[in-house]
Length: 343
Image (cartoon, rainbow, N blue to C red):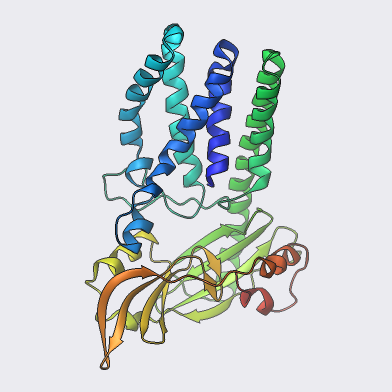
């Protein structure tokens, strides 16, 4: 989830845990602990694929953060010695701020390695977009009320809990609607006899009313969209080639193997001029994806491995307008317009 939301969540947890006892210091420490796991982005690893796939690894590990909790509590009590009688509440605050951060990240599609250093695939429940104001605004509002009404701790505390409750209920909604869309996607695939290896439903940008459905097969993938307001229980799919043959000479190249693992094989390959580029199909729409990496290049007719580098996509926020339109307008046959929209 975006850092602003994670800070707000940590602050709300802090206020709910210790706000009535020690005031705004609980909010501030909760905000810091809520932000802490994302500080791993400040550590450059010297390689684009490493930077991409080691984010949300050690810093988002349940094992690591559990071990760090007593260290953080020790530091907090050193700086706030008069609150030592609330040691157990401090432990609860820090641990909840850490764990809610990583569990919220698990609800996005990026991929969170909560069991690092175990080499289990990243968790990506993909029930919510990485920025969703419907989730974030109640949290932020509740925390602001708690800060503004610090002299009236009971009212501020109550409003903060209401914000936390509304945001949590929204997450329950996202899980339910994802299950609904997933069922419709599988119905469509069965009706159209579309062979597939895996199906991924992903919340569209900034909302959970429209969902993108990504279907992977051996040598091709399908993209479709479904709005909860669609009258017809079907997804209109368009087919695209994966072009795995471009990786034939790169199968042992570490960035290739790492991206295959990290994306759960939700990727496609493209030749751009003389560059071989892997596209992470989980984030973006056809034909532009947020994360694309050069992993090889063509020299003298041969494809050779190269150090990975990120290929910057062309963004135009005005191109998101079809997303909003698609929520309310169901296509009659295919959804060519949105599938060809740059995002």
